[in-house]
Length: 310
Image 1 (tube, rainbow, N blue to C red):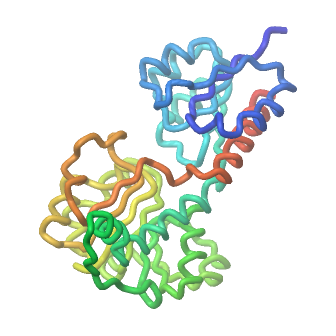
Image 2 (image 1 turned 90 degrees about the horizontal axis):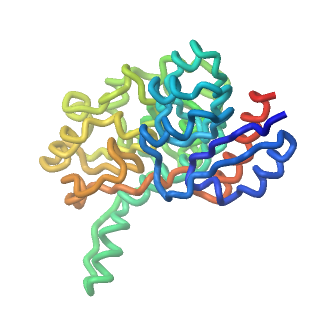
């Protein structure tokens, strides 16, 4: 019996590969890891997937073109929760199983989202830069306690944000048309509202929705104009949720106070004009990049792949 060929694309997989290899030894697998230090391109994925049995995939493209070229592919295990880079319809048509490492990075991403709230409301980044440049200017900040947070999407990460912000004494609004767990809503004292009410009443809006045709560019000129001038926008989910041109204009004219993102429409972001603004923060997709989350994602995505292949 020939060895199963496994492609592993996430760059951080190596941080806990020993745990994965211990699990994979039972299925006699030949493993190809991504050692490029970057996300694979569509062309690279097409070539790499041609004769593999299984893929543990990060944000690399698994679109129709890639899947059609993967003649032996039986299973795709998502290293994380979002499936927007995988063509699920083509996978189903071809009989390729798909699973994801649900909730493994929820705490890490939620902590970053809440960290952005502190960072922006207390002007931590510009204050630290000011001091390093020899200054001692102080900007008056605002407390999070008694402020209103609007959570868009109550998946595992959104629920973690609710748990954390409740502990900070914040009022919680949420929008998720697919969520109806009354116990969670009561536990965290969440007020379920429509998007317009969430935009109008929130002091902080944090996005935790998948990128779909329905949610693409959900933050745009119209929705930004509904927000308070003192409100902050946070996105640790997917770059495509925000129309970046509209966000730039809103930040320049003061439609909202500021924005912080861990994701961007095109990564790396290069010299995008948003980066020139003092009231905009961008981090390099580090939400799930913690030791704890990485180990959980490595183990769970590997177990999911093994289960699908068996």
